[in-house]
Image: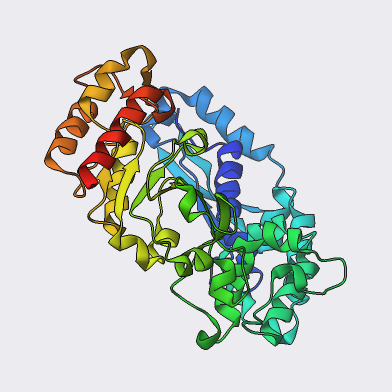
Length: 394
C-alpha cells in the first residue's frame, strides 16, 4: 500500500533541507513553520480489505521517534469496524526541530554563525545566504578568508593590479582563483554598478569584470621567409596587443591548429604561419593589418574543423581554406578516425564546396563520424599545395 511511512516523511524533510528551505527559514520567517506534512493514510475501504496491513502502518507511526514532531490524528468511521483513529499529519514547530530529526543540528548552528558573523559592510550578502544556504555551509571553512577578499575589493574597486598583488594574511592568488565563481556572485551584490564591467562574465572573465589585470592572450607565429625575420628571429610568441602593432610587410598568412604542423611548415615566400588555438579568434582580430593579407586557414577535416573555419571567417571573411577538401580526405582514408561528438549546426561561413563536404561529414556519408586530423596529411601534398598558392600569387 502506498501509505506514507516514517521513512517517507523523513525523505520529504530531507528534500526541503537540500533545497535550503529549512536553513533559510532561520534567517527570514516565510511562514513555512510550523511545518505540517500531510500523510497518505488507509481509506475506509482499505481498512475493510486489509485491516492487518493498516494496523501495522498505524503501529509504525506509534513507534516512530516523535521527539521532534507532533503527530496529528483523525477519526474514520467504518460500517463493520467502527471508529478508528489514524495518523493524518506530522507537525514540526520550528526549523530546529526539523534539523534535529535529520541530525543536522550542528550544520544549522554553523550556518547561524556564518550569518551572524557578516560584517556590517557585507550585509547585502544576507540575500545570497537566503538563496544559497547549503553552499555557504560547503564553504564554511574558508568563509573568513572569502569575506576578507570581498571586503578588500569593496575598499579597492577596479584596482588595476593582478590578483597575485592582493596582500591579505594567509590568502594567496590560488585561493582567489579557486573561489572566483562564489566571489563573483558576491561582488555583483556588493559593488556599485560603476565598478563592474558587465560585458565580461563567468570565471574566465573575473579579472576583466572587476578591474584586475589578467594574463594577456599570446600569439605564436613563425616567419616563413627569412627576409622578414625580426632581429634575426623567426619563431616568436608575443601578446595580442604587440602582435597587433607589428604590421609585418608579408603577403601570405597561414593559420594552423596543430603545433607540429606550425613547426614543420615549409618556407613560403613572403609568408608567416600562426599557431591557432581552436574556437575564438578575438586576439587575432585585433591585428587589423591581417585583414589586408592573403589568409589561409588549415584545420581538421571533420564537423568541428569546419565549424572553426566558419567562425574564423567571422573575423576574416576573405580567408581561404587549406587542404580541407574531399580529395585530401579520400587520399588519406588509412588515417581516418571517428569524431567523438560530431556537430550538427548549420554553418554560414563556408563556401559552397566546403558546405557540400561538411554536409557529407555531418550526414555520415563517408562513414560514422569520419575525421581526418591535419597532422596526418601527407607533407608532400602540403608542399605541392603551397607551391601552387605561390605560383598563383605571382
